[in-house]
Image (cartoon, rainbow, N blue to C red; front, side):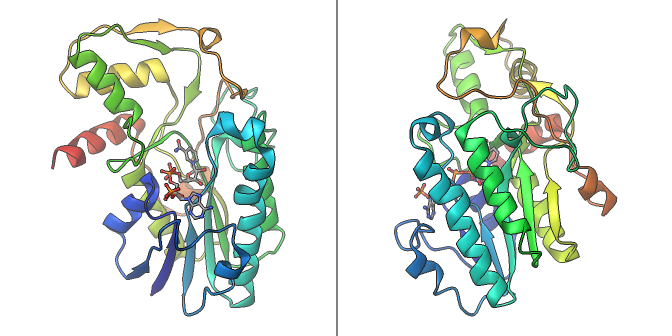
Length: 278
Ligand SMILES: NC(=O)c1ccc[n+]([C@@H]2O[C@H](COP(=O)([O-])OP(=O)(O)OC[C@H]3O[C@@H](n4cnc5c(N)ncnc54)[C@H](OP(=O)(O)O)[C@@H]3O)[C@@H](O)[C@H]2O)c1
């Protein structure tokens, strides 16, 4: 099994590299830019192409929709086309931000998307461009990804909460935004199992359950053995360029039907803390 992994230096990409077996080639962004059609045209000799690359600074996407569409939609379409032509299996990753949050309950795959942000629109366009080809492809929607190899210098949300608590700082976290935060390690493992099913299509792959960021942060401190208060605040106190859904928890319904179960969001935190410490 020879796999081309795009976005291998990111949180999810690194979790895949740490867990999947087989021959995996993971070129850097510099050597393989998905916005470069000439690079994409060279993807010969692989059995699978897995795309974890994205332009996913949600606020920047608002002012740079062309760049968002280039990476999240048009490049994904070109990758899918090259895979389809070679009968290569393709997997690409999408987002909970394709939903508007009005459902107020975990979204399943059959729910109608309605993105609120340029980022969400660009990711949905990427999904649809793949799906229209009716090819050997998986589109994996996930939510609130955090991994032990976060490339961003700030670290993950959990890291920041723990650091602030250890420093005795005041911590304020929104308590009216509901999500399904997902540990990259669990996501990577489920994606591998999904690839083996050959049951192509759209899937929600998240740690199970719905939680506010405030509840999530509280559980992270509890599991880290840290006793420190967190003040719950409203998202109206948190200004950002892009509008985000107030409720974007996802239920991994189709995955469950295949017999692949996801650990809960609390188990995700525990696994993250364990893996980070090892
Ligand atoms: N993080 C979340 O909370 C979240 C939530 C829902 C869905 N997702 C989706 O999950 C996927 C993985 O996210 P992640 O958190 O692992 O992201 P990440 O840590 O930012 O990693 C993104 C990876 O893509 C690479 N990349 C970016 N633009 C590229 C391009 N034009 N060509 C080639 N490589 C490029 C980056 O390389 P450089 O760093 O070198 O640029 C990096 O290796 C994305 O599709 C994202 O939209 C993420």
